[in-house]
Image (tube, rainbow, N blue to C red):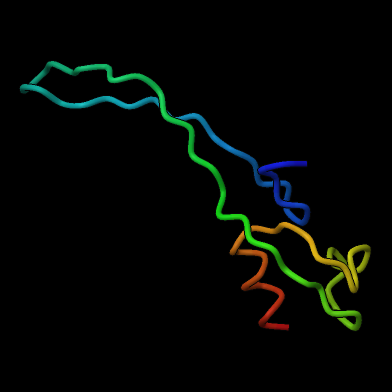
Length: 73
């Protein structure tokens, strides 16, 4: 459950980093893991969105994009 959005199931991603040295040379600097921007959000009891219905009245970890979507409704 940790580091996963409960609404859209967004999880961490692994990115390969490449740093350019000269015209055709790259320095492989390893991999870096990026995590979603998860925040605690209290879902209102009378929310009209279907994805949020099972969590109505509860406090859950969701990404910032899902919080923005819920606040528009």
